[in-house]
Image (tube, rainbow, N blue to C red; front, side, top):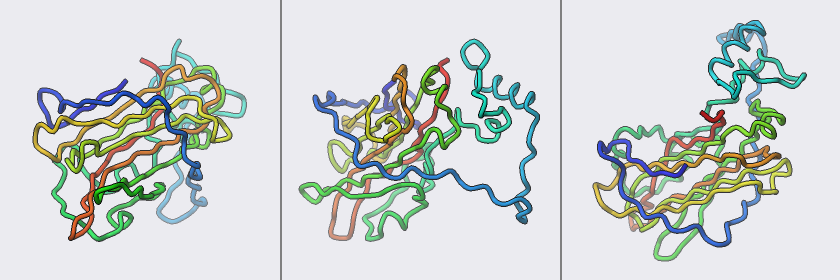
Amino acid sequence: MEEERDPLASGGGMEADEPAAPGEPPSPPPPPSPRSPAAPEPPGTPGTPEPERPSEAYARQVLLEEWRPPGGSLELPPRLTWQLLFLRRPLYRNLLRSPNPEGINIYEPAPPTGPTQQPLETLGNFRGWYIGTEKLQQNLSWTVKQQCVDLLAEGLWEELLDDEQPDITVMDWYEDSRLDTCVYELHVWLLAADRRTVIAQHHVAPRTSGRGPPGRWLQVSHVFRQYGPGVRFVHFLHKTKNRREPSGLRRTRVTDSSVSVQFRE
């Protein structure tokens, strides 16, 4: 699935002209360290009551109704329990950390902002993102943000990923900033356990037509299907265009990034 949408438009999104994918797709950059799952607080910590653990039968019933796997059933390996899956909820949730770092609402126009001298890290909660800059010509640059998601650490398991191969959906919203013809790129790699072997990949650099008011939000999404066995990591990387002005850096903003795993409908 590949689309661009404007959530504020009533008759469809802004027209876009996407260039053909390059003949040589880029290789994944040196992988950032995948985040570790949050360590649970020790029992008895004030203000953090331990969640009630459901029975195995109840957890199985609830998750099968929510997930609706093919055939209506799902076999778990001996090391897994439905109780653990009930608490982890690895399917149908966003696996990225800090998906909306600046707290921006896509259902409203991008709030006006002028050039800034402040580092990006001070403008929101960017925990989990590895941030870099690529300089370009004519006072332009890319802000590069990336995460590497460890699917097993998030609660998924080898047999599910290799045999069922559930859909892996990536989605992002970027601002039509008009700073250049192309102000956004998305690069995603599905990687093996060594975090270097590429099993599947997706790359897009949309170009908008320039019609309509600037500052609207555009959506980019893609679904990986039947990608083959061995996927253990999702390396998510997006770029947003900046322009250097005398008073500071004018940025293209991005929000509501997501990576999720779900069964096909």
